[in-house]
Amino acid sequence: MALQGLLTISVFLLLVSSCSCSRLQPWTEDYFDALDFGSFGDEEAAGTADALDFGSLGDEEAAGTTLINVMHYGAVGNGQTDDSQAFINAWRDLCTVDRGVPTLYIPAGKTFLLGQVQFQGPCKASSVHVKFEGSLTAPLGTGWGGNAGLDTWIRFEYISNLIIEGGGKIDGQGSAWWTTCAKARQYGKFHCQRPTALHFHSCNGLQLSGLTHLNSAQNHISLSGSNGVTISNLYIIAPEDSPNTDGIDISTSSNVNIKNSFIGTGDDCIAINGGSSGINITGVSCGPGHGISIGSLGQNGAYETVEEVHVENCSFKGTENGARIKTWKGGRGYARKILFQHINFINVKNPIIINQFYIDKNNLPQLADNNYYQEIKVSDVTYSDLHGTSANDIAINLNCNMDGGGCSNILMDDVRITPAVPGMKLNVICNNAYGKVTYTTPNVLCLSH
Image (cartoon, rainbow, N blue to C red; front, side):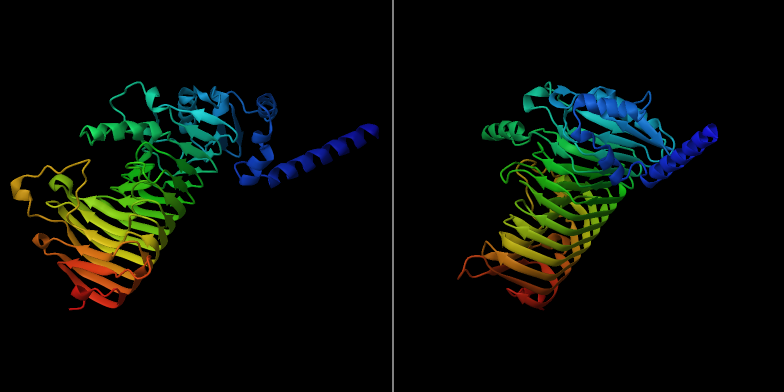
């Protein structure tokens, strides 16, 4: 009877244990909260990992899903030791997992110093996940070893359905680079090579959310050659005078959704460059910075296209520009089917601007004589429900080039801009722009004909 009672109790405990585990599935937010590695010291965390049987790879496998913790690959996370190789080794093993959604775990409470790193695919699993809770920091400007090939600090490429999310931080340590470039400009050297902090290339189905991006030497995030991307709930910040620190740069990509984010930098909050289509931007707060820009397009006579861009429910505060389209003289291609809708301007210097004579002193154009009279065609641009204040007296600037036939089918409806300074009279520049206007202040007479 005693043996039978002991067997009954053992079966009961086994059932209770199974039920408890089934309620808390791995890889959910609750699961990571339950693990709570950040609340342990290093030794306790290591002991907890051992108790959970992370195995020879330093991971936990459950229900066909693999968790790979960079700490188990030798990462130190003290902000001083180079952890690049540990991350590369962890990624290598992650990318070879062929079942479930393998997860790379970057734990909270740690700062990982990384040099230039590339995380390459394709991976064997149909989707891979990066649970990003810690901090990544770049080497100081003097710590890059004089590498002449610098263009990107962290690069992900050829990875389908990559999911990166969490409350982590990426610090590009850009101030030393900005100082070096400022000194170079004093001697007439305007092109200053610096790394983009984070570049995604050919990452179809990318989801990026929740991170904080600080002080990139150049662009904070670049996206190229990708389709079906969602970027959300980001916080991107750099000083207003930091040069060329775009928040998000998009090129040769399609069906990109950017939403519910704050971007305040020294250049474009978002720049939409050639080869891009189906770009939807909603709920973005921009400022400081140079606004949300289509382009620049057509530098050095290049053929470039952008179409189907929707910018909605966004705000601009203290920015150089608001809704901007910029093209180089002599370029070829088009920017068309563009909508700016439900926009709020607060003390913006150029709330609405189309500039077909764009010049960047850092990259002066190199044009053959026969290309000079070509032009990017700008058409089918709608501004609807744009309200707010202008810091300058030119509230609306439509400066189009007659060589390309001007800007066509420009529609303005319910655009109401008032001066940020009481008593300042607002004006409009309108050259070679054609379309229709209704209920707009100040009035755009050239569109009324």
